[in-house]
Image 1: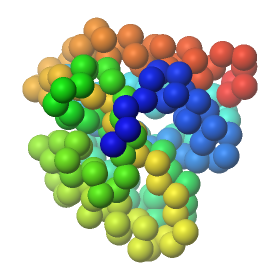
Image 2 (image 1 turned 90 degrees about the horizontal axis):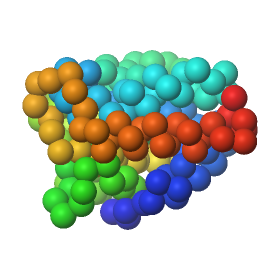
Image 3 (image 1 turned 30 degrees about the horizontal axis):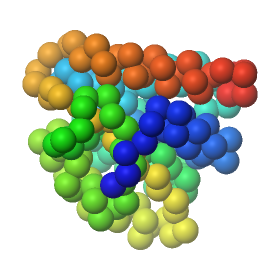
Image 4 (image 1 turned 135 degrees about the vertical axis):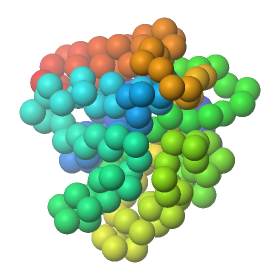
Length: 165
C-alpha cells in the first residue's frame, strides 16, 4: 500500500485516463462514505474523453460488462478501511493487498476473487486499484465532509487546463 497526496492521485488518474483506461467506481449510495467513488464517477461522466463504469454494490454487478466489452485497462476506485490513516486519504494497492483494505461487508463476492477472474478471462489486463479511506459505512445518505471535499478537489484537479474536457 502506498499513500498518495491529492496531487499524486490526480496525476495518476489523469495519466491513466489519457492512456485509455476506464475508471470503474464501486460503492453504495445508501452507505454513507461508501458512495465516494460513485460520486467521483458521476462527476467524471460529464467529460466525453473519460470512460467510466459505475458498479453500485460491487464489481460483481459489472463483471459481465467488463468481460463482454473486453475492458483491459481499469482504474478501480472503491472505499477503503485503513487504520491509522485519516478519512479522505487516498491509497494505491496491489491485488494482494485488496482484501486488507477493501471492506468485504459491502461486496457480495470477495473483490480479489473477482479481480483475478477478470485477469484470467481477459489476459494482459492492467488494473490500478485506488482506495479512498472512509470513516463510516453505515446506512445513510451523507458523506463525511472531508471526503466530499476530496472528491471536489480531485474533480477540479482533473479538469484544470481543460485536458479532459
